[in-house]
Image (cartoon, rainbow, N blue to C red; front, side, top):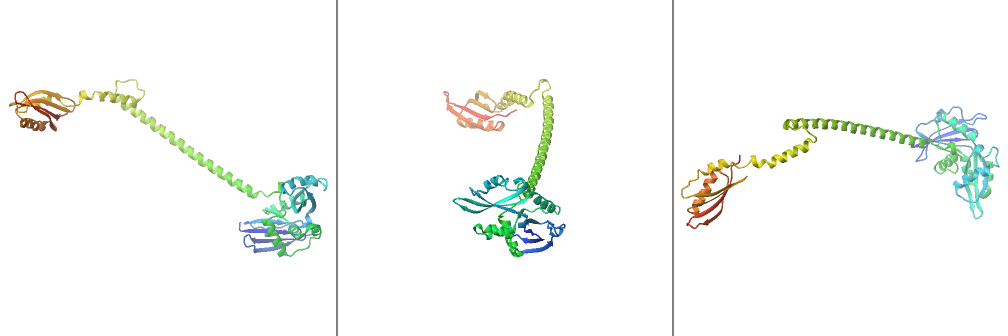
Length: 358
């Protein structure tokens, strides 16, 4: 978001600032006085801004502090060890508070750690009252505590924590902006941790998952419907093929695979094709009687499926050429494939011609 709403709670007022996140300038501000014993104002409606992120700064008067020595500077390990250290120091033990830690000094002998904590019922009451106005702070910080830490030098921190001098509004806002970027202490921990962003993300993921599931269901339904339609079409097509096959081969009773059996029949018909399709021998012989026989003798006539081969004798090579020309008038293309002289001084010839098919 582009703006943040800073709620700065002190012992007697609740100041609020609507700030530009990038530029840091104030867009609006106000102040609500607190009555005697009031933790928060009863009416927070003027603070509400639906398009902003909220941050709450609590006064040092709501906090308690301890300075401890730790053997290591790892904040994660320190936070795990602190409850055991506090159990014997505070009434109600660590279960009655919410705490955070900050490393003050590190040296060869150990590490000085500042522990700040707030009573768990107080923090719970603050958050519940804010939620009544749909205010859910992303972090709970403390301008007073940040000022004490940033101003301290060595053991001077204890005096600053006890005195807690009153700061100007400008100084408090500046400290809070630094704390928003890099919190020194943030008391939204454990069951009070800020979860709205995670919940929104989880909700978005759940919504995306539901939409993806719906798309998948629609896709599967479409695929299923298409498969049923194709199966119906395939069944109708097979029935038509069987009807056609039975009409073509009515004598065949056992039908298992129409396509395979049809191919088998076609193969048989192709093998028998030469018996039905080819050159008409009778017509070819009749046509050959049209050739002038003066001095010409036809000794051998071979008729196969596509070709007629004629062997004979004639007086000369020019006569063989005439025979070829006459053959081409009733047969197809003809060629003189062989000529040679005979013992009687005649010309033997072989002529091949394409026959006339049935």
